[in-house]
Image (cartoon, rainbow, N blue to C red; front, side, top):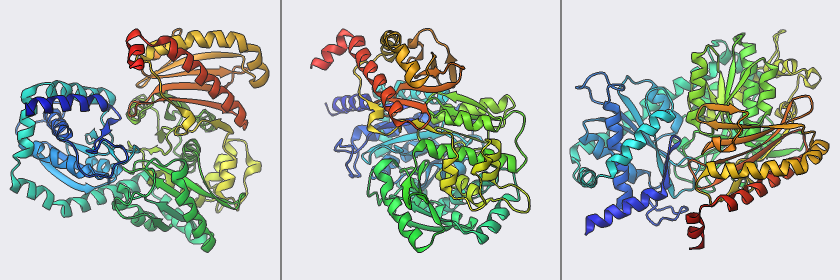
Amino acid sequence: MIFMTLREDIDNTLKKMILSASGWRGVFAFSEDEESKTDKISEAHRVIAGAAAHVFADYLRSPFNISCSQCKPLVLLGTDTRPTGKAIIEAMIPVLLNHGCEVRYTGVAAAPEIMAWARTKEQGTGFIYVSASHNPIGHNGLKFGLTDGGVLAADEANKLITSFRAFINNDDNIAKIDSFVSGADPLQLKNVYGNIDNVKPEALKAYHDFCEEVMQGGTCTLASTMKDNLEKKPLGIVCDFNGSARTMSIDKEFLTMVGFKFKCINSGPGDIVHRIVPEGESLEPCARLLEEAHSDDASFVLGYVPDCDGDRGNLVIFDTAAGKARPLEAQEVFALACVAEFSHLVWAEKIPAKAAVAINDPTSMRIDRIAKAFGISTFRAEVGEANVVTLARKLREDGYIVRILGEGSAGGNITHPSAVRDPVNTVLAIAKMLSIRTIDGKSGLFEIWCKCSNQTDKYREDFSITDIIASLPPFVTTPAYNEDAVMRIKTHDHAALKSRYQEVFLREWEARRDQFKKCYGFNRWEAIAYNGTEEKRGIKSFGEAGKGGLKVLFFDSEGKETAYIWMRGSATEPVFRIMADVEGADNQAERDLLNWHRRMIIEADRSSCSETEVLEQLH
C-alpha cells in the first residue's frame, strides 16, 4: 500500500514538472508553495532526483562519453542557494556512488563556475547542477552537461529525458532507487562531503582562469590596456547579489583584480530578499545602491543583479542625462554587449570576412542593425540557451567566427569560448567599452562603433554610458518578463492554436491592411517558424511552428524589416509568451501591435480547444 502511494505521488509530481533541454524544473518545496523557503522535499521528489542521477550515470558510461569499461565516470555536483538544493543533492550522491561514479561536490557554486570547472576535465566527466534559474524560491531543478562548458545540446538532453521516463516508469526501479538513497555507505558520503574544502578552490580557480581567457578574447594586451586606462579614469561597479550562488563565486575578487572598484549588498549565501528574476522591481535595490555609491564617488556608474544560479545578470546604470540610476531592459543589455564585443574584434584586428552572431527568435532586430554595421551576419534559433549555443557551434563548423551569442529577450550574453550566459562577461563587455578609450591615435571601442555605424557626430572624448546607449538603433520591444508578455492559454496543441491563429490573422490583415500601411508603413508580411536551431522563413502554414516560436515579420515598401510579433509556449514555465518589436521610438506602436496580437491569440485559443479541453475547463 505504501509503495502504491509512492508510485502515485511520483506520477502526479512528474505531471507538474517540466523536463526540457533548458532544464528539469518544478516546485520541489514540500508544501508545494512556489514561494516557500522550506528545505524539505517530498519522497517522490527524492526518488525523482535519485533516478535522474542514475540515468545520467548510465549516459556517462555510454561508449560515446567514456572510452573504457573499467573507467569511473566523474560527476561534478553543485547547487544554487535555494533551500531545497541540499536535499536534492543528498538524494543523488548515494545513487551516483552506488553506480560506481567518482563524485566531487563543490557545494554552492554559480552555474558558469561549475561549467568552467567541467571544461578542465577529461572525457567521461559530466556535471549535474541543481537550480531552477530565475524561477521562484520554492522551485528547483536539474541541469546536465559534459566538458564542453554548457548544458547538453537539445538532442542529447532529449535522449536523457527519454531514458529517465522509461526508467522511472518501471516499479522495480523505484524500489531500487529508494534503497540506494536510504542505504548509502556513511564512509563514502563522509568522503564526498569532507572533500568540499579541496574541491571548491579547484572550481574557483578554473572559473577565474576561464573568465580571464574570455575577457582577453585572444588579445594579450587587453588586460594591461584596461588597467592603464582605469588608473587614469576609474570605474566603479556595484552588485546586489540577492543571496545568489554568485555570493560564493569569484565576482569581487576578479573584478577588483581587473582594476574596478566594487561594492555589494545581500552578499550572504541564501540571503534572498526580493524576487529572484532580475527584472523590474528586482533591480530597484541595486539602483539605490548605485545612486549612493555615485554620490560618494562619481566613478560608480554600473551595477548588476544576478539570478539565483548566477548565469544571468541584468544591469543598472547611472544615467548622467537624468541624474539618477535606472535599470536597463534586457534587450538593451544584450545590444550593448554586442556593440562592445564587435568593437573589440575591430580594435584587436580580429574581425574576419565570415563573422556571425547567434541569437534567439525574440531578440530585437536592433541586433540585426548593429551586426550589419560591422559586416556581421545574424542567425536565429528557437528560444533556449542550448539551441543558441548549438547554432553557434554549427556556424563555427561552417567557418564563421562567433564571438558573442545569446538570448536578447532574457538579457545577458554568452562570450566565446564560454557556452553559458555569465553576468561577469556582460559587465566586462560594457566595462571594456567604457575603459578602452581612444589613445595615441588608436580608436577606442566607442569611437569604433560610432565610425562603423556612421554616427561620428555622437562621439566625444568624455563620453559616458548614457552616450553609448543613445547611439543604439532605436527599437521599442516588449520586455520578456513584463506581465503583458505572458498569457495563460487553454489549448494544449500549440500547432493547432497557431493554425487557427493564422485564420484570424489573415482576416485581420485584410481588414486592417490600409491602416497598417498608413500608421506604421507596413507593406507586406512573412511568417517564420523556429524549431531548435532551424529557422524556416516564408512558411505557408503557421502550424509548422508546432511548439516552437512563431514570428510574423513586417516589411516597409522598400522591403526593409521594421517590426514583428512573436509567440511561443515556455519550455520551463506553464505560460505562453508573446512579444512585439518595432523600429523607432514610438511606444504606442509596440502597445498597439502587442494588444492586437493578444486579441488574435485569445480568439484562436477559444476556437482551437478540443472537446476534451473544453470539458477540462468547465470542470
